Image 1: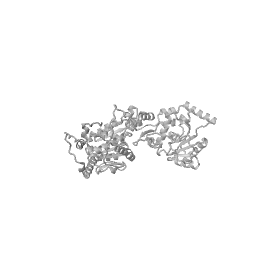
Image 2: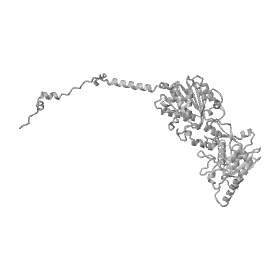
Image 3: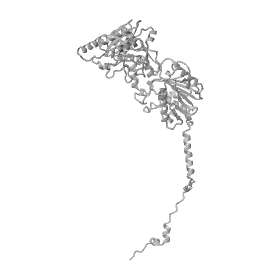
Image 4: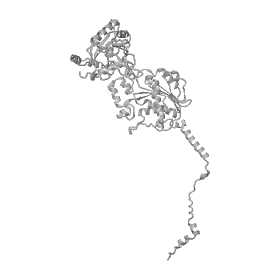
Length: 555
């Protein structure tokens, strides 16, 4: 019997009822009012594109507007942190690199209204780094002109302006303006520029209501350029900042620390975070190990340590190259006799011994002496000297010594009277090389010429016990007399013979001959006659394969 349909099922059979229940249910209207909406079909794509373009143009206008940085007009630290991404280093968070206390002081000093600021500083304390920040802050926040210069064009272009370009590129927000090799220009009279100190005329006419003049490595800048800078910065809002390593107690930079309206600042290596903490917090800056190296090399009471590490002017103008105590130690009789005996024993046994080096400082007539030094390894075995002989007689005595000793090197001072001696020895096919004390040193960053380099090579050997000398009063007097000083370029210079004579001291002929004898390593092959003594690719004051201490360790 078929099953009876339910009332609902019967109702579904009715078409009208089925249509009613399958109709979509109307959505309930929201009680919250809707914002005005434009039907999609009514949006004009052209108008939308124009609106978007206008918004982007406004964004570019704001981004490229250099005036937006004026909020930092008196806040270089805020500009450094917010715009350049360089915070202030803090002792409570020491591992985060940033501006050191000394650098902060410089920035705040300039922002505080000081018109003349001089900074004496040690090496690698971030001078160029903070100057680059100062340039960008002044240019963008003070909306002024910046003129920079340095002791050399290389310092201007490759150090200071490379730092400026690096800070500009690494900024957190795009910095407007056209950046060139040594110029950053925003408008015809709104720019920063690097100038060459060799062109004094380039400084003239660059006046501006808000002018900043920066002089990097200022001690080595000529006084005429200092005068040009002073002539530029005449306005109330014109500032001069000069920074440098205090090397010379003369010139405009030194005078700024003696008198005048200068705000005087001091950056010592000993106050740098890397040195204080004993680890490299700020990469590339001075370290505690470097400070120790300078103390060991020059002594904490030396003018070089004072200027390079402490950032102080040397207490005196010049100092003795070789202390008398080093000479006394090298001339200690017992040690010297033992060294001679060891040489003789090795020769007798047919063992290898260092070749002889002859070195001659030439004089002609007068009171000066021609000196011929015989050196074998670290031992000066003989000292000959004569006076009142002409140059050809000197040639004969040198040839005689060369034949007797079979010397590997014959070194002659080729300056002045030594020139004809060198020429004649070449004719006689003696393996002679000329020594010119005035030429460029191998380490030209440290020494002003080969004379200075040679004298300090001698000092280093004496300090390490690497040279033994016979008891000789004239040699002793010669060694302790010459003085040295650091010139305005930061290079060591040793007194010339003429300067010694002017202060009543005899020419150090014995010591100069000894210095020349050390100008070659003991293990070099014999020279070709007339060969240039020094080579660009090697330091002639450092033996290539072994130091004197190692070669003669058996002494």
